[in-house]
Length: 412
Image (cartoon, rainbow, N blue to C red):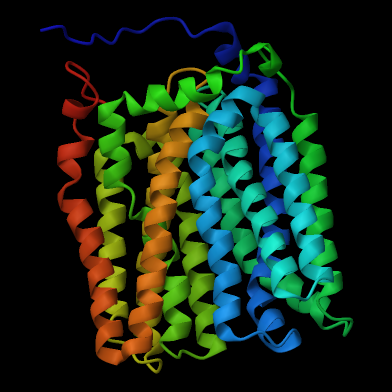
């Protein structure tokens, strides 16, 4: 039987140069883009439901439809968009993403009918699907020594914006001029992000030189990698585990103050975990992902019986979920960046996140439906989410060991 042999070879010139000042510039610029983009996004997202429901007078079903179209379409687009990112290049793809997101926020601030709002949701979904593969492709392309720290800064910036964005949105709404200035500010921030994408150094072969048939070649490469497909299947619940508390806590009738405190604690803990996971490529170790999944399971088991009055257990669940987010995101990124062949990270990321996004979309629909049924069903579905995380953690040795990386390689 043929066995895969891993040998140490000199890094290519572009990989070595990525660890020098050019690599630092890429990381710094991507983090600046992340700050602008996430501030704009969370400033609007925190107040969008109230705008649709109270300012525009939409029924709850219409609000759910708009949000569901945006989330579901964005998840579905991730599969082809990863390969598109490899074809066009992350700089160009990122700039297009920011333009689309800016346009979507302009539409949100200026239209009021269901049809136009659905168009805004579609544009936002397309921009969101393009943004993350582009940003993470740039980070995956820097030198291996800088890659974990760069992604740690990327994730920490997202969590900081999770806290600061809603405050920015509230400040703009307090001016008393409605939702339009808030949406315009978000559009401006995403425009800044688009300009920053174009300022990133362009190394290596120009994307335009690639033949168009490569659009599907990347997806075929991933689909032929059975070990990675098993990894993607096993990690499919992680997006639901990361976002599930954001859906469940308000539905459990916690006060806005308690919910806000919960989300701030969660974000702070997740951000604080990043230096730990980045050090020494720790995120590539199987136990990091398993521990993250176990913390997620514990968080949902604690959350399940709560009724909106027990703040201390809620904060404990927030800490555990924050640890989970802080471990799982960089672990998945580091292992995917190491697994993907050169020029194929976008395709690998697209397959991975498409599976996770569609799983989360279906899970959110199920959570909402069972919360409408009653308290017993709500408790059961949260226990079920915890059980999914526990099952993934128990199964982790089977898809974290070298047996799925390929014979002879025990790093996957």
